[in-house]
Length: 207
Image (cartoon, rainbow, N blue to C red; front, side, top):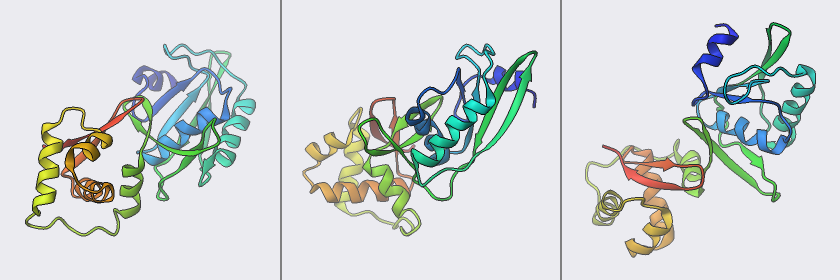
C-alpha cells in the first residue's frame, strides 16, 4: 500500500496522523493505546487534514524511541519506515498489539496510566479494565445460572443510562470490591462491555 492510500483512509482505530512529535509523554499515550488495543501506525509529518507537511525522520525517530523506552512501561518495540512524497518525508511507526498488556504511559503528573484506542481517539482506562486484563486468563467459563446479586447488578447496568462505576457503587448497595469483582466477571464472560469517550467511561450490557 502506498502513502497516498494510507492517508486516504484517514485517522481510525489503527492509524493516527502527527504533524510532528513535540512531547514524548503525549506520544507515549498513543503508542501504549495501540499496543493495548489492536496495534496501529503513526504517520508523522502528516497534518490532521491529511496534507503532507514533511519532517526530519531522524529527529522524529529519536523522539519516538525515547517515548517508547522511557515513557512507556513495559517499554514498547516498534518498526519504522520512511515515505517520500515529492521532496517531503514522512515517518511511519508501526506498533503491534502487545502480548504483555497492559502498557502504561508516564503522565505529566508523574503517574503511570494506561490507555486504549477507541475509533480515532486515545482513551484513559480505569481500574476495571486493568483488572480484566489481569484476570482474563484465570477466569473460568460463565456458569449456567447467575446468582441473585449478579442478576440484579446486570439489570441495574441495563436500566441505567451512562452507567458509570460511581453510579454502580451508589445504586447497587453492594460492597465496592464485590461490584468490581462482578464487573470483571461480566466483561470476561462477554455480558458487559465498557464504552469510552475521551474523558469518561461507562458500562453497557452486550446484546
